[in-house]
View 1 (cartoon, one colour):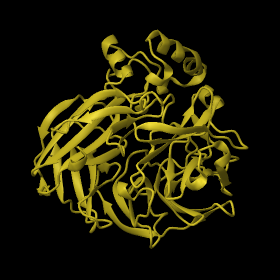
View 2 (tube, rainbow, N blue to C red; view 1 turned 135 degrees about the vertical axis):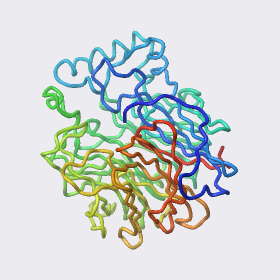
View 3 (cartoon, helix red, strand yellow; view 1 turned 90 degrees about the horizontal axis):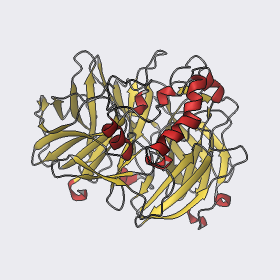
Length: 477
């Protein structure tokens, strides 16, 4: 994930296969990219400014672009010619704790910004029901982008929803394309206030602080999910751990006394209030970073998700004690207030994360899901995914697998629809060759899930590994 530099309008020529002639739209992926390198401050991979990597398909031609997201934080450090704001990498030991609690706020104020302005937008990218492109990071509001005809992005600015949004938004809001609503959650790290909100017509319609018997606000709380009838919040076993920071270890630590629990809001309840959210606790401690897909059958909520249990030997990284991630199927019974873990055929065969489905299935039903995978080795390093998996949600099993060539790693699979069929489309992903350090953009057939790409497009520019992506169709541009 070493940084790269921006580039404009590189034509991509197939190495193998051919470009689907009727494919038209833009693939977008975002990730952290350090502006000043090598860094003079202790730096974590999450610290980089947001950069968008785009692949534009039109009339059988393919064009690559990459550029920084021009957030206020990015522009300030660019003008200063140096790193200014406190880095996640600095949050270690007593000095790190002081920087996090005192120096960070002082530096933000000296730069003429509020805490909510220092987001990097480096975590996720999305296309909203009201046709906006958002770059997201948990530290602030969504940052709005515009896609040019070439596929390059142009920075517009923070989207405060016409002045109605005054809090940070998580990196993973959920979009219901049936109702054109957006649901999100967030945590204020200083007050530990946990909240959830609903957006419609470009405005924040409702927001409420969430309450529970065991305090909220110190968990990792990275993702949530929606179904046709429910909005579901997730509170796992990770807890922000000051003692761990003082010892120079992880920011969050797996607490085996913290059972996995879900905050369930029935969408038919009317007003979004704290009292309308029911907490349902699992009989085990676990952590969920990213969900793949959730739906409900009456008052039973079914969640397909990567999940980890405790592993005390894994102490490195932001999340200490995090075991290997495997695909599971959880049944959240709202009436019985219970959580049951069901086995998934093939669920234990691979480490898997970054689960996705067709975006138009969110809030409804999906037949297939897709995720990045790796062999279950104890020394597995985060983000080193060596293949892709296809999941059959009706058969409760792994349906197919793609294994990359030796030495090649990839990331999150993004589904590109071709027709109305459930898996009629392509799976898109950047692949990185660890030996040559070269990158290709690849399309796989989502139906056959053959390891032979539909097309492989070498990118004659460094493309680091990144986080989350999105496909924007020609009709949406």
